[in-house]
Image (spheres, helix red, strand yellow):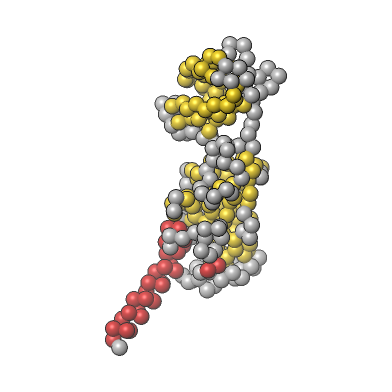
Length: 279
């Protein structure tokens, strides 16, 4: 009987520890996807009651502050998750989000530069953004860099918790997206009346070390690649030999200082350009 009582006390202590520390996010604490995605065993409502505080969730992907439903490969966006509530006085908020390829539910793009109070956790080859501690703010924003060209549609899944701060789950509220936020891929062509290339896409953007170029040229030949800083100085230059049709190139930009640049491909008469951010 004594051993049974001791076991029960340890079990209760374990549950109390889990509930108290689950403020750090379900991927970190439980090692589980609670977004309601196809690979999630169950959303946050598996642990937190659904209806307390009349919770709601809003998810947007922002480009310079404007909500979008398409993405340019390699471009940086802001994922915003809002944990709403219609009643009561919550003590804090939490969230979890993941971006998956529509084709096979693998990771799509990457979360970058976690702000204070947000962490990135990897589970089964997928990256999750979630709170690192219970937040007093019901709005979570994090940078998301879109995946490479050819990925296709991206599905974003997310769930939120509105907490009562009682170190348990019974008095909390939670909500998740019944349907994912779907982003369609769009490619930006740089060709104009005076343009040089049929297509010129660069990614990732912002870039850290290796810049990838996705090009489509009508004419085979030798071209000049230049990366110019905002003062008009050449920060990088090399010759490119392009063939007719689609092709890919990589450029080592690890030595460039952080800042904004212009990538230019020219044949001496015409040129195609793209804006680049080096982080």
